[in-house]
Amino acid sequence: MTVGEFHERFGTQEACLGHLRRVRWGTDLERFVCPECGHTHGWWLAKRQLVECAECHRQTSVTAGTVFHRVRSPLWQWFWAVYQLAQDTEGDQGGSPKGIGAIELAKQVGVSYTTAWLMLHKLRAAMRSREQRYLLRGLVEVDECYVGGQAHDGSTGRGARSKTPVAVAVELTPDGKPGHVALKTVARVNSRSLTRFAKRHISRGAMLKTDGWGAYDNVAAAGYQHRTIVTGGGAGAIEAFPWMHTFISNAKRMILGTYHHVKAKHLDHYLAEFIYRANRRWREESLFDRLLIAALGTKAVTYRQLVTGGS
Image 1: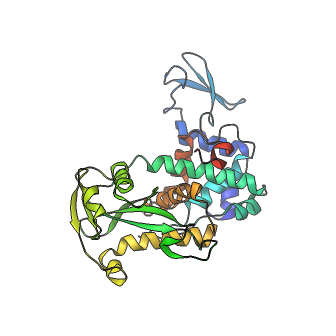
Image 2: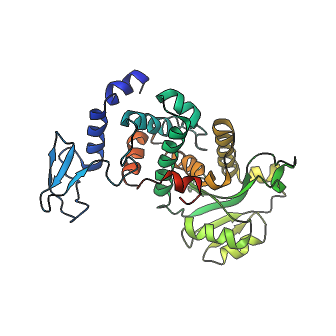
């Protein structure tokens, strides 16, 4: 959509509510389920923008129990944030490094930085919730990287205290192309943390393709097959694991280019944004509604949860 097309479709609160209702419950409320009694029939109260359950008569708004529950900002501003996060995957098999920062969103929709920051993080939480449903299968490359900038003491590289260790897994198709990807911060780069990551994101019985580091033998012992390639690092590692390094590079480029600096306690939310687009990189035309569906299926996190790292 162009900016003009967007505002023509979603320029009013009524238009946004109507679209959310169709996405959540269908044109004729065919997907409606009462949150109180579980009944599947109800009628729409147009003047109040509520659906009333035909069984228990509870009245429910389309935003109740979702990311949009009791939001103060007009819904068109939220829709614009959804559009900015969901669009422009570039058809890149390594995942798009795009996104939008809170400062830029605040300028575009006319809200404070804090409001824009909270909007984006609530939507990233929906992305993260959606991604936690999936397991990688078949042949899966596994590695780790470090994300972050130069430390205050001037140190760089893996030893920099400002860097956060991140486990990475890339599912490969039979013809060697990348499928789904998973990235998650880990407490330490050791067999225990990597095993926990594998159990959470990779289906048991999958074939793990790793470098020669011995910790991955312990990871494989948790129920996986294992193929080792000794690379020697550098160009050899890139040649042996090209898609792995493409995804890592693009994730870092998104964080550095769009967000510049990310606190460790929020890094998983930004990684979830990258993963969400990367795993839907062939579905750009439907990403807007897909992210709306994710937001409608996720309860909103609070500002307190976000700033304390408790989300």
